[in-house]
Length: 585
Image 1 (cartoon, rainbow, N blue to C red):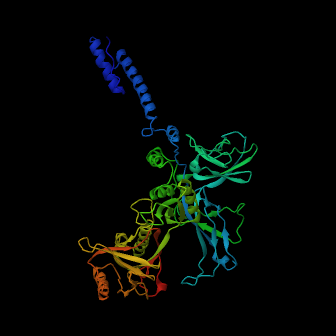
Image 2: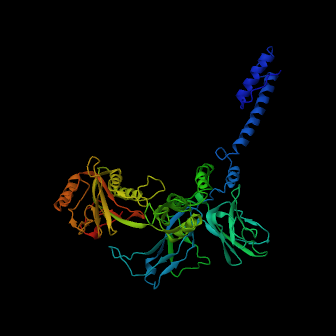
């Protein structure tokens, strides 16, 4: 009986070795293994063919499972079986500032409104952006700076890279008719449908099953080739658009990650209809580069994301589910869901959702998009209210800045402000210093400033502008009292340092008023001097560990710097004592 080849050998070297061993055993006289030997040539060819066949068989098997699939068409087909679709592209976002020139301000008698949907151009990059909300430049009066110059009237709004395009179709009257688009770069979640001037709605959870025969709904399909299509019903699950109906489908076409632009590159406004020319010359700029763009969802991303979507059946049940659904909306950086009742004994019934966009920006448009997302996924008995979080406004004043010899004072001063901005820039990472409901560690902010290259030492002051804020100071680990010392202030006041002419007054929970000595730095002696004032008021304070102070940020709030600058003139020529001399770099 002939010996069988072990079919566990599936690659070239092992197949070739098996063939050679068998040949030696069955034809021991064939001992010629020269490169020019016809037998070796034949055996090599056979092994190569077997290797290729094995590879194809292995890949066919691997492409049948989500965990091992490597091609996008097969991934989309597999995920479609469980009702999951990968994301379409997400556009880059950027804050833009519209400005009316100083010369034209004097002629303004009413507010200037730049409508939502205004198209902007980054001429050097050849990219277009579209505003997500209207910008209003009001005329309450004419403010001047320290030099007596009129401050330009400005308005800041968010813009997304790309433009809206409307494609017209005519209904055939057939069941389950579909209409597609040539461009593969249709932005995620930005499709609207109007049929004979009547808006139609995307189906709940993007399925027409059980919708009812008269429901004016559509669903969005994403093909294996990255194309996007819109499908209508069959008069059983969803209404069929009447034959001859005019179907207008508006989509947002974006270059996603390829639409990135640097700071100060957006420089032109499109005044073509329906916008039309503005009554006053207006300029536009983007102080920061665009962020947040994503290409079509990758295989690895979809593979990691689909288990959670399948486990919840595309519904939001827990607070974590609501947060996850909110972060799926393009442009959402962070989200926090809070049970309004805050009672573990009462089932989840009323949810407050707080969201911030890229770079920490908030907008009504973003809130509306998140509201639609969670309303589509929530349980029917749950009430969800999406809003922007409250802002804990913080002022940071560097009262003294000393740099090492050989460093340029102004450069170091600018680096300090950049470091502070970086600290207060939120990210979607769990280690972000700025997050909704996350308190600010004074020691971390101090460390960020101290680590700026060239700094010898500095003194500073930090205060909140928000009434009823709290400062939490935690005792050392070995203290018998492990609860934080909580001090509440009813008026804006300094947490550390002393702002010019402003006392540091705190109101405790029992309404006792205490005035602390000015803390001009994070020096331990200054901290202890402050504690002496507390002790004189018969308040027991445990030993504190230096630097563990927090600006308290409650759920539904996030910290935002309003002012950060210097009391000392950044060119090193002297120090000012009046607030007018506080300048920023």
